[in-house]
Length: 328
Ligand SMILES: [Mg+2]
Image (cartoon, rainbow, N blue to C red; front, top):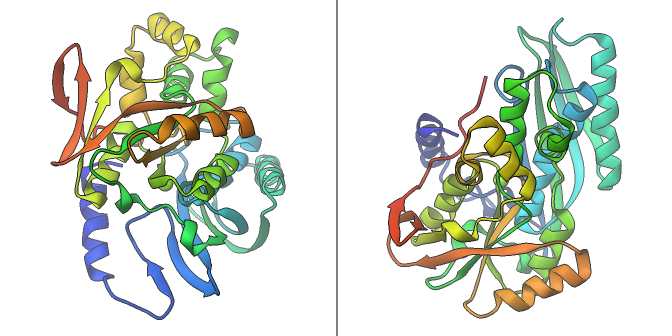
């Protein structure tokens, strides 16, 4: 997302402001939230992938592209703490994608839907100058457990799952070389085939301890800025606490890049970022590790003010909205 996209979304949000029966949350979070029955809510999200902007068929196998197209939407359901249920797929097709490629794309798409118990219920196909896929995903959960971006509180601890910057490092490797060394395969996989954190989102939402949550699609600096803006707070990230894998450090040395920059401003990690009351993060981290075998790390703290700040060697600098801008 870049500044003009942000400005556009702000404009649309003000045009669309209003209330409708059953509307719990409209524009401004990972999903829209609609009241269903009793305490159940329906979660709705949509995302578009355009060839040459969001994916490159030179290195993205169609099977993995199909998986990723679904995964990035499933991730938005995870970001609220929900369970994905139904998908719609609209495909704009061009000769750039052969019939065989399209079949592979659909195989990957349906494969990941099955893994997450999601049913494809509709869609559309049209001809277009370049391949484009739009997916709408519907999920459900208890309305009382939904984790919104606007719910962070002053003093909250900020936590995130997994390693950061992996997908950005994988993209950089794919862009710069045809045969990426085998040791960097986990980074390339993170870029080509991200894993949405549905099980983690459920555990976090059901714990009752999470205040704000979202998924990291545009990079830590930008996504944390969304929580700050929505919650009317500032955030401080400790540069020494960024969860970097040994593999990303090696890739950074190999390409002459800064692994911490990938972690802060690289997009598409699809890990979950959440805030909890001071003193409650460690116990929740242990529960996540015991139940799911997943690592979560403390990244920083929410406080009063505005903007996202990085604490590095005693210096504090603002890093808000330095995230992913879509690559060609
Ligand atoms: Mg999201």
